[in-house]
Length: 83
Image 1 (cartoon, helix red, strand yellow):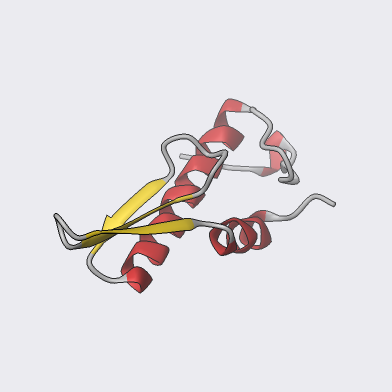
Image 2 (cartoon, one colour):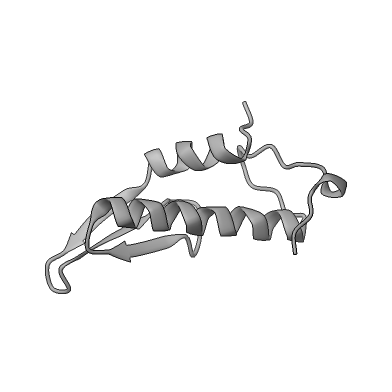
């Protein structure tokens, strides 16, 4: 089953991995399978929001490049306007 934009982001964030680094006193989060999709911050909720935003940017870039993302229902290029 392929997912649409917001559903895809929600599902991906649900399987994000979080790690606390006591040295810098911050949380880090990433989603396996999405290179460069990473966030860092003092509170988990802030990290989760930043991670969702980074994943959204990642998907928009892939749409613009016309590249496939496994599990994501890629919209038809003619229907997507990306500045």
